[in-house]
Length: 338
Image 1 (tube, helix red, strand yellow):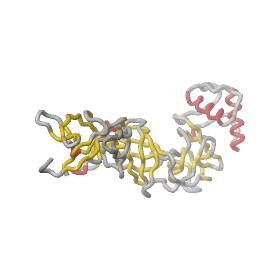
Image 2 (cartoon, rainbow, N blue to C red; image 1 turned 45 degrees about the vertical axis):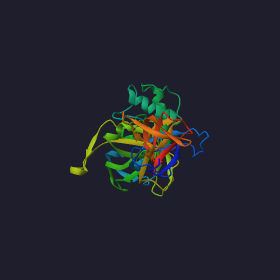
Image 3 (tube, rainbow, N blue to C red; image 1 turned 180 degrees about the horizontal axis):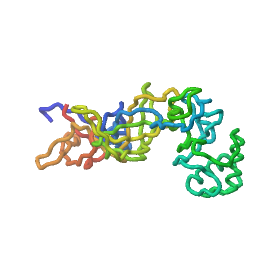
Image 4 (cartoon, rainbow, N blue to C red; image 1 turned 90 degrees about the vertical axis):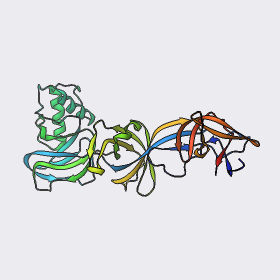
């Protein structure tokens, strides 16, 4: 080291990042710089992927009416509708929300059997109506519960449920946009609605798909610079092509659930950092300490008093000017050309 001015850097557990890492960048967490004889703190290596996302409430569904009545009541945009409450009113009769995964498609009455009967009975049970078994048979007991329900709603008491009497969705609804006004005919689209849970939609390049899996932790950075925690809820299995020419891209849809969001953020562009890999007890040295060896591979110059020797190392992940290595010990001093 007589011709090249050098500085030394401790081979120690990696330091935490000072700023958000870009796409496919490794951020190090761990201890601080130590003296030669000291033992470093244990640290972790964390590989992250940062992508653009859109905060919202997920895809909207369209609620339609199929009769020739008159719209007499509508909810406000942004309002939440839960089980048993009205989605809209036709001829002064509320059309209540039921939870389920299939719409009602036929008249439900005595003697009818099927999964749609079970859907109706399950919702009646959740709404507090009793006296029947929740199964797939519409019995006299089911009819009596339906009559009680219709009376409470202020509807004609018939004991029969028609497909247009209710709205079925897989959970609570948030009204996105009204498609009808009071006095309009109750046919066609009435409103659009989403779920009530805010989530982030990411159109992920298929080249990065292998980095993201359901259940991985994420951090969402909002427009005001604040961050909230998230988790990958789903990764799409169908690739979509967008754009053309140099702007062409093939992506899959990734959904990230979030928590702790401020109410003021209903929809916004966000940055999503997903933890794609974590490694515990990682040792790291400055990238500049790596030296290509004549026999192949890499080594680092280890300073021992006034002498320097080269130690062969295996490299791992790179980030923030550091590289994960094996073959050196914590507390060693390595030389880094200035």
